[in-house]
Length: 150
Length: 142
Image (cartoon, rainbow over all chains, first blue to last red; front, side):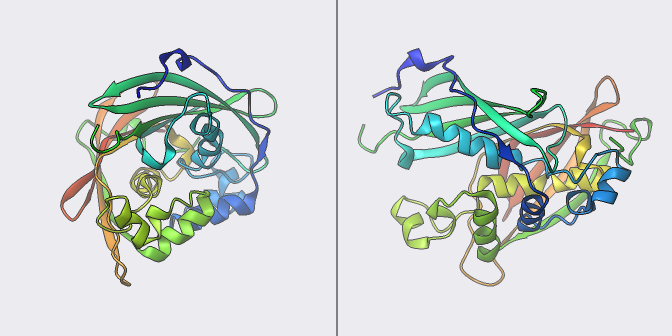
């Protein structure tokens, strides 16, 4: 059954702040094998003009993915998560995420399309710091594959 | 922001140094922990096969994170990236051995924009197959 179009434009309440720690950034950078000193050495980050260590470009997904869980788990929308795959992902940055940030995400459903029986959901997560300044917006497309035989 | 590459020193077609990134099962387990994405298709072969995959596959976001290193290693400052997007076109299948697989990433300047910005188009392949589509970054150069 196609997803309800009336969900297009729906925003979810901002998430509770996620506090970005230096060691979390280090853990993430090591997990992707990225030795750029801007992620682990505050002095190196400062030499590039950042107030503290910054996070790798895809790190915001850790926070926005969690926030998008509100959409995925919304019983009224009724997405079958076991059939969902990640179609595409884009980030538009005002500045890099950095240690000490307290980030809140506001998730909005931008579009719902039906393509070849698959539900294609475009979701936007706008990330702001605790002074209300925009940090990054993450755009993700989730594709819910049609069950076999339908 | 302090990219070490100057806008005036690049032109459309300028190639960034290509890199090859190994992808092992151990790396996926580690990425699952660091990212919080514990979907079993990324570590459990039995589960992956049950849902119709040939084997365990890498997190798309892991591949996305690797690919952009070609850009951030080039600029020096990861904060120079103002936009980055990809489409996940083919899964990166990771066998259960110590070698795993590898993703090869090349990139070139596709357009010079205003305000010191350039668009870089990336090509990421695994075993000769393109694994990311529409893979693009917009970067602020010095």
